[in-house]
Image (cartoon, rainbow, N blue to C red; front, side, top):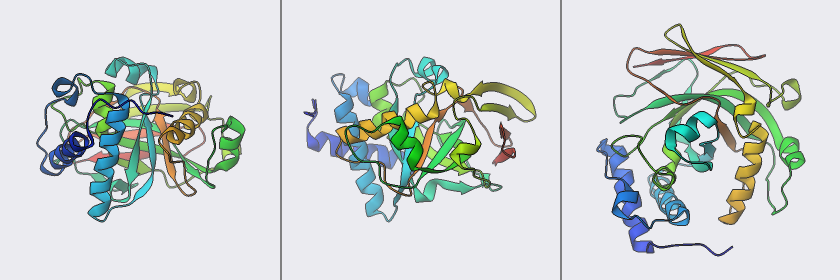
Length: 266
């Protein structure tokens, strides 16, 4: 598939470096879509890929992918109607029970979702839901800590794609289940903040089903010459709109059939 680029490779590389430095130094930058109003999604994914190369050069490694903007809440929040994807890095995983230090983050938010561990490569233009379900080894409740390297979350989808889909950290539960033990579409989720209910939702909020979200990802990655790899962790998308957080907060995520999981923010 022919790509639609309006920016040059040199501009892609410069913007990726700007985003990387913004993350390392916690110094937000101006919106790319303001600086380059004609930026395309293909440009944004090229910037994202350049950013990944910088992180790998610094010794990190990819452990999976995240899918963003999959629920009505997140689409309304970011004023868009299509998902996006980013990559997960080894250093961004936080073990359940550990605290999350947000002192170096800019505008962090937390989301509750399902993570899937993929047991085989998913390659091909004609990937089906059956292929996806057959390849899933484990299902795990998950917190995702999102952040933006821009001034705030008033971004366009091209900005968040370039910014690795707003990825920061993630926390997996410690009691995974097999796919046949749950129903991803109807599974219920409850999110609490400091003991107070934030909201409830089911997996159907994620593009009708988290499996549909992963199917979208598999097909989208093929457009960019890559694929979901065996062993990848896939964050399928938030059930609810993201919630802001600050030091001292305690979040609890309860999914049907799983033990509740918590995260302490400092």
